[in-house]
Length: 339
Ligand SMILES: Cc1cc2nc3c(=O)[nH]c(=O)nc-3n(C[C@H](O)[C@H](O)[C@H](O)COP(=O)(O)OP(=O)(O)OC[C@H]3O[C@@H](n4cnc5c(N)ncnc54)[C@H](O)[C@@H]3O)c2cc1C
Image 1 (tube, rainbow, N blue to C red):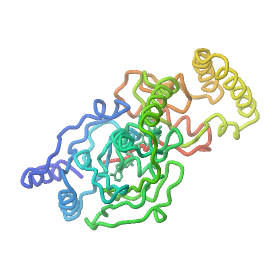
Image 2: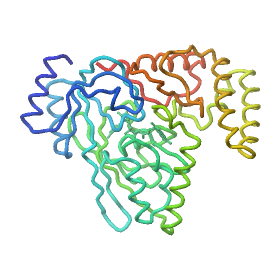
Image 3: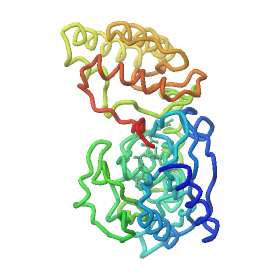
Image 4: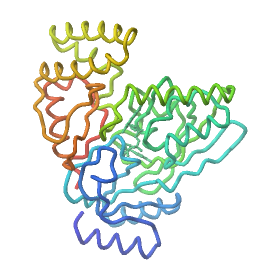
């Protein structure tokens, strides 16, 4: 992919009246507020347009990549010539039967959770604070507070690199903790079908959402730009404890103090977490990198302290992974080699 391909692609998009942005600045648009400039950021309005784009790019032998709300992806600095397809305009929610719905992949997860909560369906309220798109959520099998995006999912409609549309049922999609069939494949999730099975009193659902929002804002990072969890783990301290006797002992102490503070003083819990983070970073010998660090609320969250350089964040994550001998699977998608 070079400047000439960009010019050709740009002309084709204009001729076919397909919406796109030029010089899309990741340091402004991504959730981590760092990264380079995407030369062509394409926003098709419907599935027909997605098909036309994919067919055109295939015929020109141009590789492309798909992004949702960029809340789980860290992309390198510099110019990015690979065209990016983003489905933010495909966010229609269509009712198929009384409790069966088709949801466009560009719909935000928060809108999805609020929309179906307002209809009285229960079981999806926990998803309410996840900042991704439903397409990105299905790719990642996003979950929180006991709700998982794949809980009520019945099938996914997606497009391959030839523009061919496929439909797969849930049992063919290998959903696992932060993982799905779509990993390491350049498939475009277009529409997702859900069948909701549980109904609940509206007031109860509204209160549940309120409580989850309050809990999230207390326990999760909300002061600095971040990408949610760095590693795909339910408890980073427990997973780290498998690496050495010292880390195992640290986990026992950490666990005890967390239970104690949670019970008797939530304010002190936050101060304790700040302290435990610095101890863990020393034990793991993580080198400091200017501009990025770790959340005071959890070690499992990298934060931007005021830098636009995604490469620094990538370096910090690589250092962490090396020092823990890749013992925990990374959750964040890193695009450091994208052309
Ligand atoms: C503050 C914060 C809190 C978070 N909390 C949670 C949480 O509680 N639980 C949780 O699970 N996650 C959480 N996350 C992570 C993130 O929001 C989710 O993983 C989300 O599902 C990512 O969606 P996205 O649209 O932003 O995906 P992106 O980051 O844009 O993309 C992620 C991956 O999905 C692929 N993808 C995106 N859209 C499509 C599509 N239509 N077709 C095919 N592939 C696609 C991309 O190619 C990429 O590989 C949090 C993130 C932040 C910033």
